[in-house]
Length: 258
Image 1: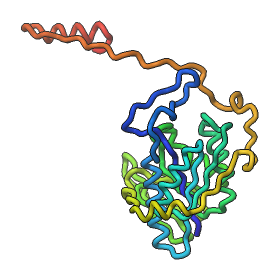
Image 2: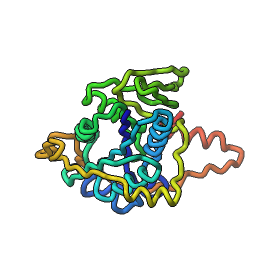
Image 3: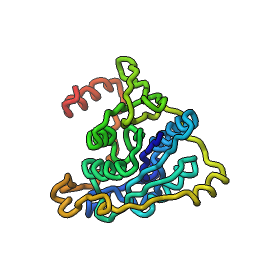
């Protein structure tokens, strides 16, 4: 069985993140880059399945600039067998439709039985990549799983909703996505980190995958305007001199909040 797990390098969630006013895109150069935590959880789920299924291999796949290789190295140090890095300057600022198209092309070359990903990234927040990939690949998808397992023929998991939970499954090949409810990712040891340097990583361009990037700026969704968030103003203080209730009511009424 072969598992392809998608990971993504994103600006540090706990750091300052800004939008470049010239492009309307997240300024990734000015922020510390880390592997998206939900991607690390997907890697952990893939490694647990590999341990239970002898002969299984796990390949990490990412799309991003040269520095995204750091994210692949992190996945390799966790125990992933090899990596695929899709890198192309023409993909800068790619929206979900283009991202899904290119990643699907890369995944076809792997002939994976199971494509595993996180349910939503912390930088984009679209939450639909798994379903898009399944559509491109022509396979079923089981998404938003709080627990996941596979016997090599089926993938099965638990999807939790506001109204309860459901056990969902699909025969392989399939695409599955996991939520933050799956187990925490493991911490690589120093030995694992050094071993990861020797593991193979294949670098692929969009052209090698057959993706035509000519004119994508007009064929895909783009940002047409961006403005900085206005500075936060000081609040209004209501002093209670026995008439605080009336003052508060007047304040709410004046702003159509009552």
